[in-house]
Amino acid sequence: MDALSWTLKNLVTHSTIIYLIHVFPEIKHIPNPLGIGMIPRNQVSAEQVESYIAQERGKRRELLQKFLQSCSTSKVKVDTILIESDLVSKAILDLIPVLQIRNLVIGANKFHLRKSKSRKGNGVANQILQNAPQSCKVKIICEGKEVNEQMMSPPPQAATTANDTSITIKGGHQQDSISCICFKPKFK
Image 1 (cartoon, rainbow, N blue to C red):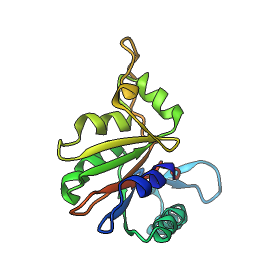
Image 2 (tube, rainbow, N blue to C red):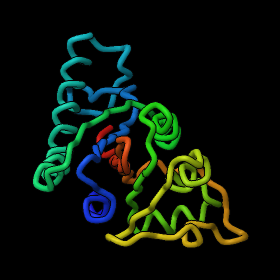
Image 3 (tube, rainbow, N blue to C red):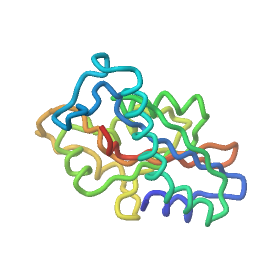
Image 4 (cartoon, one colour):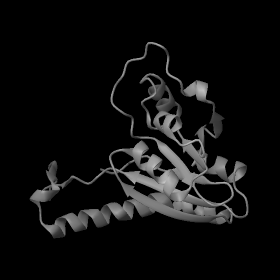
């Protein structure tokens, strides 16, 4: 929400459209009807899968509602894009040319920034920062303030681990300035 607030204060013009982009994990398992563990989705009925997907859709709608309300209060045009992918940074990077995004705002908390630094820049924010086309300005917002690239750079001897896919990302598009948003995957 801090990243959206920052965007509304710093990047929005009368012709801006904000895209709220939510990248959520692929649904490969659904809860066991008995309440014990998860079952591969190909081992349950189509009705059970559809019921679970509908529940998850409702959770995503609820999550996005406060962001949509904030945009509405600011009288900004807003649209939502939901992407099912386990590769958050790739999903966002692939969307940049499609929507012609020129400003991408990534929101992160201090924990994810520190975690990203210790992973030699393999976090979602760093991957996007390093691989976004030059036509797209990437801004990283932490606690309502812009973070510079040096703060995102890893220390020289950091260990490499798996990619961090739990980060809030924000984005949007228009022929003027552009702002985007995506959200931390909360639902599995």
